[in-house]
Image 1: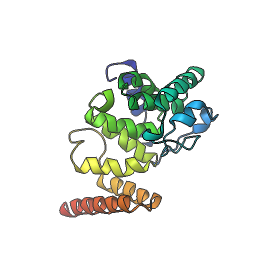
Image 2: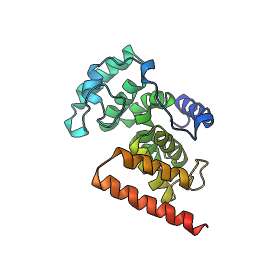
Image 3: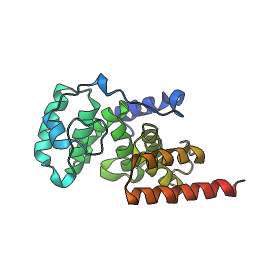
Image 4: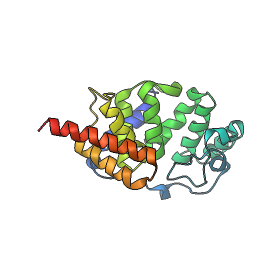
Length: 212
């Protein structure tokens, strides 16, 4: 993907971001059809804030049926990032990550929040046929956090503290990351997430204190 036109679209979208990069971002789903399709019923992710159907975990999915439904939905509405994300999702789950690339590109170029974290995670280690690119992973994960995605709000500080974005241009400001974690804490009552948030907060605060 990194050498294709999809990469150029993503790079252009990220390059346009600095004017709002330090502010909470909002995704305008109303620009795209909210009609529930067969793709939505068979391939929505339960954690996607812009899903239009309840969502399924991988073990619950009929992947061949989902691929067919999403191919048809994307053919009817090729610019819809939700549908492209979902087609990329089912291709990836089916072990066909190489086919997912163009659809991932559309979702990322549209700044679709669910795609930002998921594909950031894939680029971190080059999973599922994605190009290994920790710096791109950091940019995508941080941007997902700015959109209020709890996975990004927790995941970006976690991997930053582990040094996975060392040498990258992505902003890794401790105070901003504390803000992400505070926002994540307000979104969850899950014991394990709350524990992870507290541990990360303590590590960042200790790092800040050591620099004073």
